[in-house]
Image 1 (cartoon, rainbow, N blue to C red):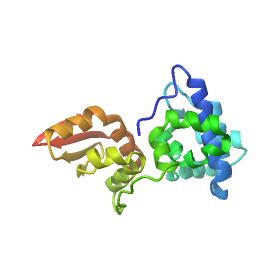
Image 2 (image 1 turned 135 degrees about the vertical axis):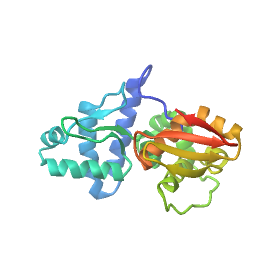
Image 3 (image 1 turned 90 degrees about the vertical axis):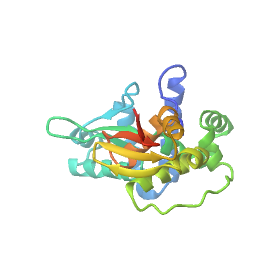
Image 4 (image 1 turned 90 degrees about the horizontal axis):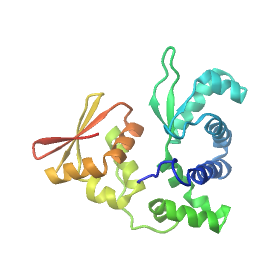
Length: 232
């Protein structure tokens, strides 16, 4: 669940590992996704801002790079979002291109089953970098009962459960959804201690999951024992 940023020492190697993981998804995933992954790889390689963790590019530029129409480029971006390969952090508007970031936790999670195909050196490095993902995909974990995803908050819970069952069970499952005003998501914790812990330790993880499943530009407020703690 806790994803290392692709900057700093060894950042170059980790970027190549990410591109390898995306390639594995394209080569061994559903046939209809192969072209989509190839197109994603092309714009990530050419235009991704690793320092800002953002792909800021217009559909016209995508269409030019791929040799397709802007309508096809727009449809491709929708596919990436639906497949949880990218998260839209800023919607395109008049005079301003959209911004997206790679959904790193989902990419590591889905590609883990294919790591051994590259070789033991790659697998060992990935096991060291992403032990939670490895535990889920390369071993047989103790199952947590599936929950029916009937709401955006249900999708957030399901995402966090899949990526770190232990943390989910102890810290996310007890949270109750209160409201979403469009700019603030409010959750309720059983105690002030839990509200404070989730805010300080799991705030970025919770923010990322809410951004991916509910939408960007939302502040998260956690209420515990009649007091609110903002997850910022």
